[in-house]
Image (cartoon, rainbow, N blue to C red):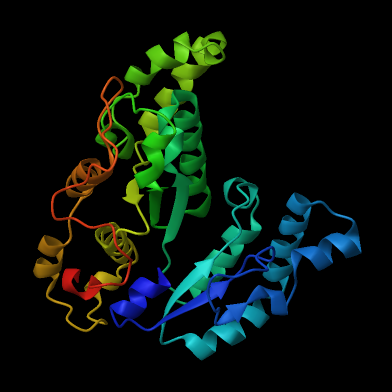
Length: 297
């Protein structure tokens, strides 16, 4: 994503807040390793990786002055925070939530971007579990929230989708999943629980998904626009070439445009369809990310 923003001439800085991230694929402007690392924490206190990550986040919460002082040096940039992927930190532990609340009080316009592997969609039980995880994270963090199905170009290498992609991105009538859950060798034992979980997700009606193929510049652009809408950046007049509110609203697409484009490029359809190897949309290349990205902005 940092390559994308650099290609669009947006000043961006990455803040690494993952103490287990000792091999970074980017150069962070701020690195939590200067404050604490998971390895040091585990050695000193005899903790496992999960307990160590929780301790590190609690330690960061107690030392917010360290983070805030360094954020002052990049306050004029678009900031990407890279957090650990441990789900407990976002579902029921409060340190990450408290850190984000502190930033919001200082007028940081935040948006949570939650990435999950798209291959979970090929299995009904894993898809429902993914919905529950996304819902709990949204409720816990109480932020503008973007859920993302990542690696959609690889989704069908794990199996065929039972329904079209929009069923999964828009979280449509989950009663259709019940037949699959109730006939599965494992989940058929939990008929009442299956129904209750599906009804719970539908009652909240909060969860939906954008899609991402990181090598597809159009896919990255669609996600960046969704994030900009969620945090208000797209309406701020802060970026070169930014138009009026109406022009911006018309310019950005929606779920329909997004899932149709992804389906045409990478998916062959539902179960029973045959996928032709190497089949791609005519004239569409799956080249590098940066390329001619500015043509799409």
